[in-house]
Image 1 (cartoon, rainbow, N blue to C red):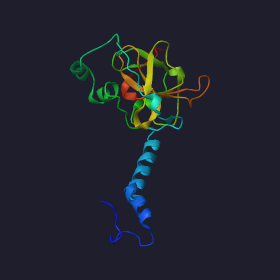
Image 2 (image 1 turned 90 degrees about the horizontal axis):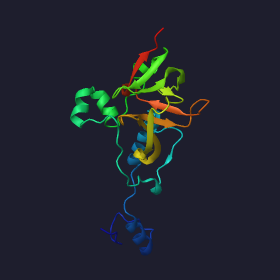
Image 3 (image 1 turned 90 degrees about the vertical axis):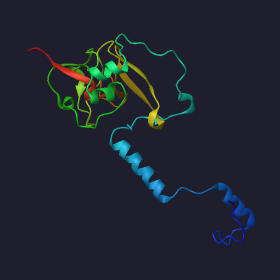
Amino acid sequence: MSLSENDPRTPPELSPPRRAAVASTGPMPSRRVFLLSATAAAAAVAAGLVPRLTRPALAGDAPRASAPEHFEVAYSDAEWRRRLTPGQYEILRQEGTERPYSSPLNDEHRAGTFSCAGCALPLFSSRTKFDSHTGWPSFWTPLEHAVGTRTDTTFGMVRTEVHCRRCGGHLGHVFDDGPKPTGLRYCMNGLAMTFSPQAA
């Protein structure tokens, strides 16, 4: 419905051409919508869903059509559900994210190896673990030939997703704000891994 000169909602000081221009622009977002959007964005940053070193997704970042990945360990969805706990299934097979500071592996400081909870492939050494203060187990490098990566454009930004090389299970993301020598932060979900202490 367009505005007319007799419409009481039309400010009297606007000329007819200006009123037509205002009418064609449509309704403006309310302050409540703006505040809710800003609050949601701030919560995502606080939760670590929006790391500080990302960039907005661009049109050229759309995934290119390619052959699906094949993994050495592959089960049906029903079999994965049988083998994994509900939390492990949500993260490894549905690319979920656990709550920060919820995993005991975040506070694991013994010498040992962190392996995939889906297929037991060794992924990270305790020698490369560091406290990132993000609430998730973090490492500055994986073991050789342990993980794969792909571009993740969810949440309107570009991130690098990390998954198990052998079964394709989602582990987390890698960011370039880690310590030396690599400068990387492999931010992993604790539920996606198991820990084996090193024998004394």
